[in-house]
Length: 51
Image 1 (tube, rainbow, N blue to C red):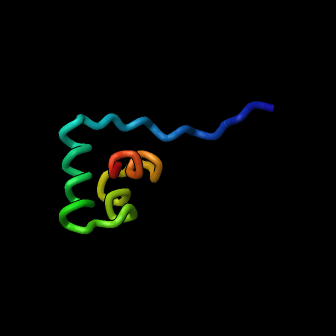
Image 2: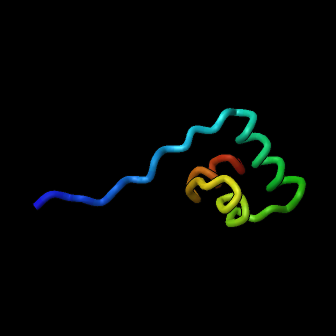
């Protein structure tokens, strides 16, 4: 039996994009959930950007 589930296409962000999202979290009080919705990335990536 083969696995037929489709993987989500990987999104690559530039350093500038990551910094912009981190600034929104730090200075504009955006939540992780809001950044995930805006960027379309996963929660673990957003958590790393916050650091």
